[in-house]
Image (cartoon, rainbow, N blue to C red):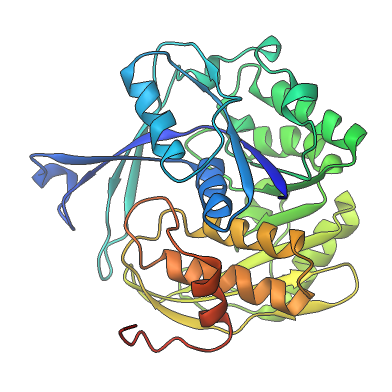
Length: 340
């Protein structure tokens, strides 16, 4: 069984019922999620040996986060226990022309206070084939950027393939801070994942003739973005998700994959959104699964986009779908008819 390790923060997600606004909410539903944790759950659901690494408090709220991962078969044996609190994010779902909103309460979370000595990467990465992290993790500050670099150096020594989703979060750091830190980490990365904004926000690389606020995307512009990223950092593959926002509820959803010589575009899906949080992570999970199983480049991008398309229909951060369900959609069965 192929072994994958993801590293980052899992948070407690608190959300009002349905489409209630924060100011209306009298109670909140509690679940867990976070970029790299979401990827680990996807891969475990696909039958891979997926481990998630983080630091969580020893108290019951920290244990509940561990249990949320164990429920779906994620290996939690390398999670470091300690610190005082679990990061929290509040989610208000958008509807129609009103966008979703996220409010973070993650300052001084256990992982943000982690030390380099907490993680024995030689042991954690033993017999691992793939390592994944996102730009959210080094943005947590403290020693976390150095911890990421420690992990990446061991990956390099062991010949482990590395993917990174740029995932710029303006509430965590500035564009200048992101560029400085991420530029140091990118030479260790084999597969870069970005969306229509990340390359611009982190590395000031822009797609031409594209207006994301209007939902109009210029695919030729993204070819140049992918090519520039690959040439700048030596990425073997660059994947860019292409979201055309019609409203908070309805998006066009596709992606592009570049292997240094050819560009591959997926089919486009018109997605009616139940929950878009974790959509990019489900794309990353699908991409990693396809790469590890030696799918062709076109099959790889179709699988990743289909996986993410399905995630938009599922409540919560985690993508609760099987390989068969993803393959069925990727091969053209998107009717949504009842399966009996």
